[in-house]
Structures are given as structure tokens and as C-alpha cells.
Image 1 (spheres, rainbow, N blue to C red):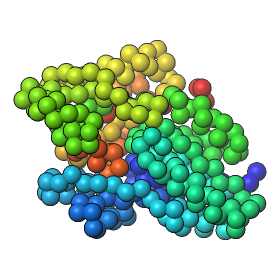
Image 2 (image 1 turned 90 degrees about the vertical axis):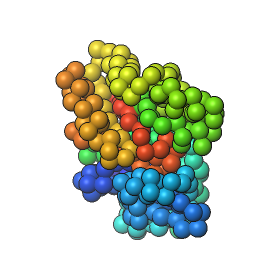
Image 3 (image 1 turned 180 degrees about the horizontal axis):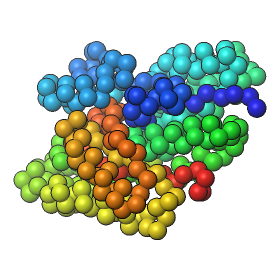
Image 4 (image 1 turned 45 degrees about the horizontal axis):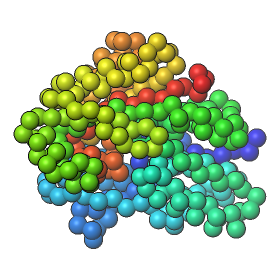
Length: 293
């Protein structure tokens, strides 16, 4: 079996200390606070530094997808080693990274015509994209060849979902996800949105009053949706700014008490999604394990 290398763009939000253990390549997104200076996610700017700067500068940052050359620079060393490539990208409904990676593929295949470069639209973001990458690494380590891996990922990516909430509607309003009136009313009435990510898109699910009620709602939704199939799913809790760490850890403890298999520590919401949701996001992600499909 020809060896292959798993690569993802940085929107997968896998914790930095886990990346070397999984042996995956990362193609960073960029963030800017002034549209002049651009910083590579993880390399130039960690999620914690990003949220600190958001609060310090009091501006709405912007992100930029990795250019074609960045994908080429990450892909080519593995091709030179004789490895094939599977690149797992942020949902194409959010970004052009999927197309950028495909363009890099076409350029590189002219030089490496005997290699395979497979680009996967994960139809996911942040934690669910990361969990799909994590599952791909588990399959690779279990001996799956590239065809079997791709076949399984196409099924598995349909099992992912995020239930999350935010304390402030400012970033969603700035990005056009909610109107100014709704954002103003939310601030006055302490309304918290419940938002879900599935099938590659964000959907408003409901609204509740108060942060504690919002956290209980995403917890109850997750318990209900998975039902009696707890043994078939892996969960992770995501949080944006570091000030949400304690809340995220409490959610992990509650989920474990209910019998769920949950990643031990919260995963960060990186700059790609943090730009749209802001520093106050907290959520629960889940995916069906490949063995249980």
C-alpha cells in the first residue's frame, strides 16, 4: 500500500499539542486587524493571542484563505517523499480553501503525475472538521488504504454536528448573520442564540434567555440527538477565549457523567470561525466513530 499524508487547513482547530502526535500537515489561514498586516494562524498568531487582540483593539478582524502557493508548499515535500496526499478542507460553503487546494493539486500533478492528491470538502468547521481529521488519522493508523479512507470519510462527515451558543451577538451581527435590531434586543433582554452547524452551514436553532440556560440547552440537545447510541460517538467541547475554559471544562464533566466519550480537554475555536462568532462561543461537537458507521 502506498503511504499517504493527511493534511488540513488550520480551521480544523485541533489543539497545537495534539498536531505532532497525529502527524498531520497544516495549511494556515490568515487573519488581519487592519487589512494591511496578515498573520498566519498558529504560526504567527495563536487563538489565545487572537482573542486578546480582538478585545484590546476593539475591531472586527478579517480572515483570508490560504493561497494556492501555500498548499503547494505544504503538499510538495510529501510528494517528494513518495507519499500521496489527502487534504481535508473547511466546508466549501464558508470558504474558497477547497478550490484553492484543488488548484494546487492540478499544478502539482503536472510535476508528479504518478501521485494521488485527494481534496476532501469536510462540510465541517472548527471542532467537527478537527474530529473528522482525527478519525482519518485513526483509520490511517489502523491500516486503511487511501480508497477505503476516502469512502469512509464521505459517510462519516454526514454524522457531524455542532450545537453552540455565544454571549454576544456583535460578531454575528457584523457578519450579517443577525440584524442590528436583533443584536440590540439580544443585549437588552439577555437573549442568547442557539446555533447549529450541520451539512456545511450554520443555522439558527432557537433563542433562550441567559447564559446558563443556553449552555443547558446545547447540552440537552446533544443528549437527545445522540440518544441511546452514546457508545458510537466521540464528542469534544469547543470554546473561544480562554476565559471560557472553566465553562467548557464543566460541560465536559457533565457529558462524561452522562456516559459520553468526550475529549479530555476543550478544543479552541480558532481564528477562522472566531472571526464570525466572536470570543464568547462555547459549543459541543460530535461525530460517529468510523468503526460504528
